Length: 260
Image (cartoon, rainbow, N blue to C red; front, side):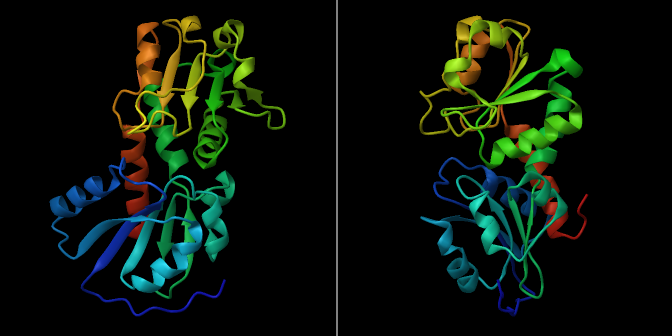
């Protein structure tokens, strides 16, 4: 992709989030508050709903001050073909949630989701090794970031999807016995996200115990039905807000040339 060079206006640095539906997102509030606390009056963060990822070049052409983007569902994988370069983190995960637009107009894809999830999980899930087996619900861009984090932490896992994908599991495979063998269950799908609060992944929730840890990457609502059903069974639960904050700070480091 030959990206045209843009003339950036020094008085304005614009950031934003791209996705299909963004009414649930907290990213704009998070960064707007951050800019205010740092006194960065020339910074702003906007939401850009794209009906298809093919609208991205038009957005970039219309926004010459746009220097950084977050990427959310369903474009974390599809956006790759529109980028000039992938950082090591994005190549490793196979998905992009942060775009850096360099001063010469090049688009570099990064992944900070796996960093945010990894660091958040460390404080939530104490088990490592064979006793810490995990089930990842989903196989999209967010799930790929979770996979990389679990491999770094030495936690064995299976992916669970609606249809059988390679060696993974389906929801029909989730027997009480299988849940008993997997202490950590991670919802890496958008199921249960506002406004669809009454939805949750199809699990035998009655098989959960106080030995289980349920991590939902969804953060709006703060307690999803997936989490509520886990709590009813005595399981430990956590939403994705801390992950959101950690990945956002890692994105901020990238946009300011301090990538970790």
